[in-house]
Image (cartoon, rainbow, N blue to C red):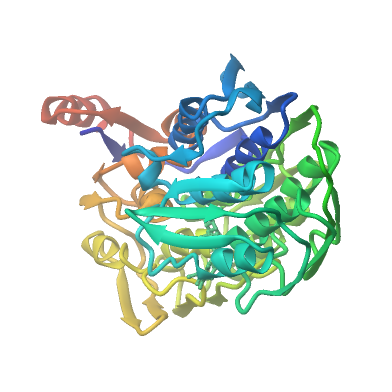
Length: 434
Ligand code: UD1
């Protein structure tokens, strides 16, 4: 089992290039099989979740040609199997996008019930409601979501809850339905817009993505395209908060600053300087950090996927802060781990009450899920002493070359697999820390 060993105390300084958005890529790779023509997709993050999905797409018969580590060509004309199930796909949440894609194109899909990070109950009832409204019959049997339809017919769908996954999934299936579909109370996340743009570049007719009403006129066929995925808002935000926590000065490059506004606003509130450029954002943390209140909300609110990283920053900010998690009920599992590093956090229902301490101290901790894992790495970078983060498998699901990017900013971090390597790292780096 690989681990990160980190010697904290170095401010992160420099520039870091942000990759393509994982959550956009997962939907776009699935949607790519909806045409029989060849689709080229660029700026795909080379992370575990995208690779698992590409393998699953290959397994059902699509041709997947990896042009380089961030570009693939996909041809879905060879798909003969509508059953997507293997031990890896069962672990990723976004496998559900293959239901919308296959159902739209072939009117049939059997996909393993999605897994993903254990951050609370993650039902797919809204996805199913949407497919049923389009005329499909949808059941869960033998651990699979089984969906089929004679034909899909456009309809009016109101989502009871704002759901990124359901919005995108219904949008995909409706793109190849007969007639017009209206999705109300749609999610407005940047990757919803990216998927709509991708589908439109294949000939779909989707209007209104990015607002809460999306209108789709179904088309019979989709065609080839070449498309580049938007930058990852959450990867960028993670580096911005790492800069804040380590008293650093980091410029995140290749980003869309507008997508980062909720994060930038909180960084300004806690006392950082944030400078926006056309496609970059610089965060400077030179003053003592101050407490604030954060509530996670659908876009353009503060993203739930940044909640643990923000809590880590607030844990070393003066005064008492609160973090309210309004999307997933079980997203405070990292709190016990952070407490081992000296944090003072009490969780009451969906609110974390955080009393800022002057500094974290290194400890042995486990990454409980993807974003919480990244948050513990940030805490370790800011901590005094040595931290070992176990279960970095989770972090690798969504961050490409995390340790390499952090090292290039001056972090003392290595991926190791044995106690001996941890000791070697400790000896090598003990003299380097200021
Ligand atoms: C996606 C992201 C995830 C992010 C989340 C919220 C992917 C692969 N994952 O997850 O990283 O944290 O958006 O921005 O893109 N819900 C239902 N019924 C459903 C679907 C959702 O009740 O059928 C609820 C969920 O339990 C949650 C809320 O709706 O409380 C939002 O979930 P949703 O936006 O669907 O999240 P995901 O698409 O699973």
